[in-house]
Length: 89
Image (cartoon, rainbow, N blue to C red; front, side, top):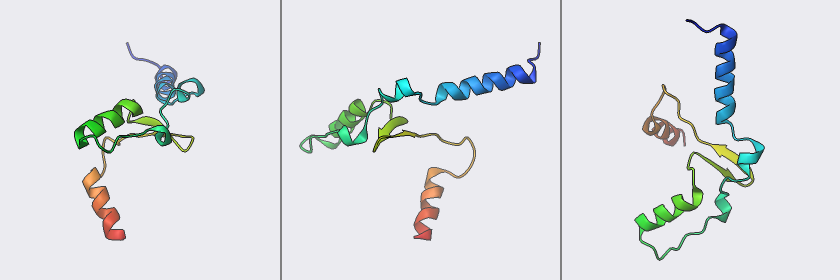
């Protein structure tokens, strides 16, 4: 049985809304300025401590703004994008 366009659009809208941080979830996001690291730790342990404090590396706060990191399924790779950026500079 096929879903109607309205049901499909509603499901897409619901999925998109579920991905957007709401006011309640934003209060629980880590703030980058509040993360502190011990420079005496070895690099691997420092990285693990950073991730433990950050929580979700794809959704956090920076200067009071919510940052949501997402990647496109198609398009230039990170390496290609960075190389193009460096060529422009």
